[in-house]
Image 1 (tube, rainbow, N blue to C red):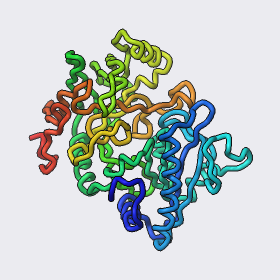
Image 2: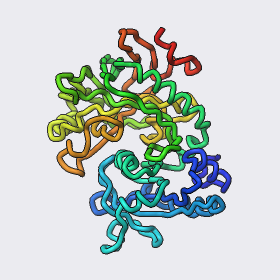
Image 3: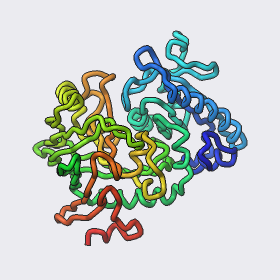
Image 4: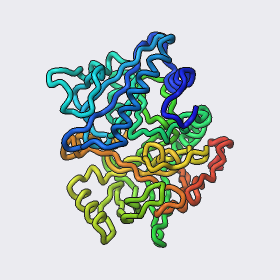
Length: 398
């Protein structure tokens, strides 16, 4: 598989068989794309992604015909925010459309009907649909690969040995399932900070891009293990997540200027204040005051693709799979307790990942896990894994 945005027929078949392993009675795969509107205006990468989805539709249809799989192509109005709820309806893409205004006012099919009929979905969207599709997949039994802001630069990550990716993700899951806390040491602008995340009452999820079980949804490309920090939802059991979390805004993988580094003060798994004198810090202070659910620490993610030769490209879908990331906002789709009802409006629902890469403006100097006996396990140093992925994870704490 090359870095080309298209693939030969045998590579398409191999990719679909590897990721989904379709069952004998599954006859339909659908590609979903979202459309710009008056508020969320179109741009080059979004337009190119829609064109790429149309090309994939044609090529997958030809490649999978002998397997008895038909391929459909659907449009829907964008959700307006990452991981916000999807609109009620979708429209078939038999006629090319590039804006919500072009959708027939009296047409469309309820998403619930689509979910009940189509067993395999691929969402190539501008705004991430991972959260709503995870929730809906459990209700309707379909499988979905979510590809928010996918670009041709991500194609090499689809050519990895997904069996090895899965093995590493399962190794991290075994460790996180035993851990009761994760400890972080950061350095930003020469200033150290520390954070402890409470991992009690939680199990981890290995997301390797293998979507073989009905009722599952996850990113493609993938290659991470994630866990929701304990959010304090149990009576008389507050969360013990506390400390300081620095985040660089404006940073990317191509050494663009850093707009601002802000530091969140975390107490009981929520950002309670924001340190910094710049405009981003001021905006973040206002945001956590206006939208308390956004202040929730909703994910600790550990990607494995960085050790497998994949480089950052400046897009979260891929870059978060390279190493450490910590998210704010919605968590119910990952097994947490914060969902759309906790936000002020559907448009305010978010799950936002903050990615920490070696050499970035905020350096993740150390990440350790702690088990119930108080033993510490070294996981990352200077953003690189120091774990032995070939060892038995059950023996790692001894």
